[in-house]
Length: 353
Ligand code: NAD
Image 1 (cartoon, rainbow, N blue to C red):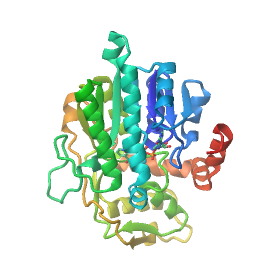
Image 2 (image 1 turned 90 degrees about the horizontal axis):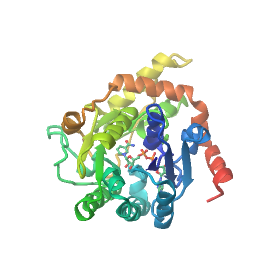
Image 3 (image 1 turned 45 degrees about the vertical axis):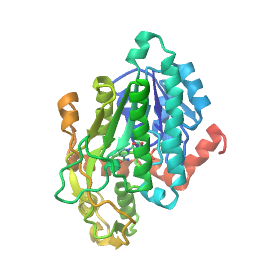
């Protein structure tokens, strides 16, 4: 049994699918089901009885302790977070509460559970913390990519709150000996991505005939990784990672935001040509830049490649092809997310919040 926080979200949800394609070991999910958590993403596994979904807050130490006691997991994988940079700029409070205070409460519950374990189980236990490359700040076009020893320099309330959680995890290993692992990953894309994020937003706006809003001059660079490659990296770090270590995860796919949008447009031109014969690129519009917008992120994945033997399976071209096809084929999931139908489903199944 493993316990995963935040697995009704984008990466955690994909991780659950990825896990059950390779393992029968059951999962218990703790998720607050915020606007970003959609239980439909993992409903098939819940329905099949191999995955238990508990609605609750990682900051609720008593609830986490009770779940640990009841399910006796051999590992806790911590995905839950407030994750959207723009939202953190408009309202940082939730980010501090969940990403820092919530992670602290979770760590305290886990420390107490782990401390009381029998010696063998205690030695085998793992706490894996899922984090972001944004904690390292911004690069110029000529700087070397982020490595695990790059000093932290977070620039947004989101990245600062994630940096805080990373430091707590590090401290729990050094101070209490908690067997932790941390992964810092670049930008993910793929199925089940909430349509406020760049790639799904562009796909869906393009199909709706709406403007494709590109921040500033569109020259900001991100390192993109297909979400299933990230999930495989996490699975392998859980199995083989050295205790207390940090692993950077990236796809060596540095791409300018404008180029990402143009690739999506060309893919849609091929897969779903517009009836009037015009091209999707005509919908691109440049909008005022995000305050404090980091210019470039790039990950050096040498350590995870060398120590763990992980490399991504997808190129950006193959991953974006899968992603665009998924959004074209899964209109029910998309409609539910956009209309709030899944919120009604949550209220029905878990009670209104
Ligand atoms: P997401 O926003 O899609 O999902 C987050 C999930 O956490 C949701 O299901 C939400 O309901 C849940 N949640 C939020 N607050 C909670 C709380 N207090 N208690 C319990 N559950 C709560 O996020 P994501 O994109 O899947 O990201 C998952 C993790 O990976 C985050 O820690 C994020 O920082 C990290 N990460 C994301 C990316 C990316 O590109 N998306 C890249 C690197 C790292």
